[in-house]
Length: 206
Image (tube, rainbow, N blue to C red; front, side, top):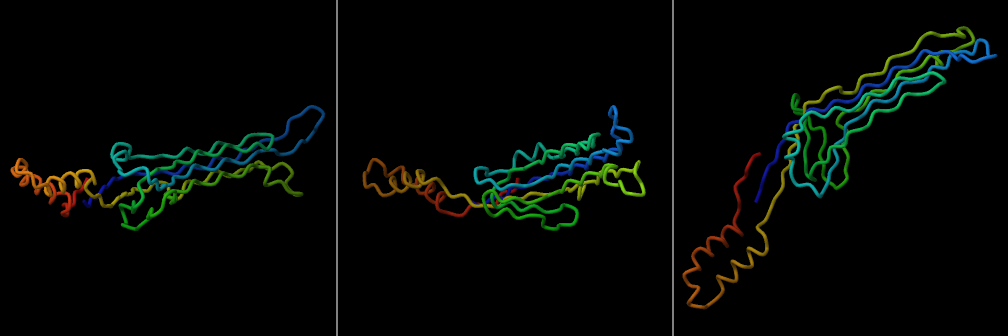
């Protein structure tokens, strides 16, 4: 039995956090200098192959997947927290393509194989990174970068094959091979069942 399972999703990478502009403020420490921390990295979106999953039906209802942004930097050279990554578990054999261009983004052929769908943006730099002998008190920080790409409309397609259950096939063959006259009337429906179990199936699209 051949089948094709398809789902359309949209993934969004997280933006990096902004760098901080901060100066050390402490008693008995004049001119403490800059201590602004960097921003955190934005979350990324991955597709993970899972052999324990055989359908994409979950993604027919949850179509938008947005990773978290990175946190802003803080004083005392504290960097912002990174955004959590999103891992979308899909069946082995899934092919992911860009719905706009048709370009193949990933082909999940093995268990636990990971494909990056959207990369989170890098965090911005705090003002401590711009300190120099010329500029002792920089008031400059950089903003976080946007995710690459920020939004990807994707189509995930899973193609595979499914055979009839062995128990059904064994029952059909057992009924057909018997010579009992009481079961002669059941041979015709069982013949149809055996043909169903061994014959090709039509392709269905979801």
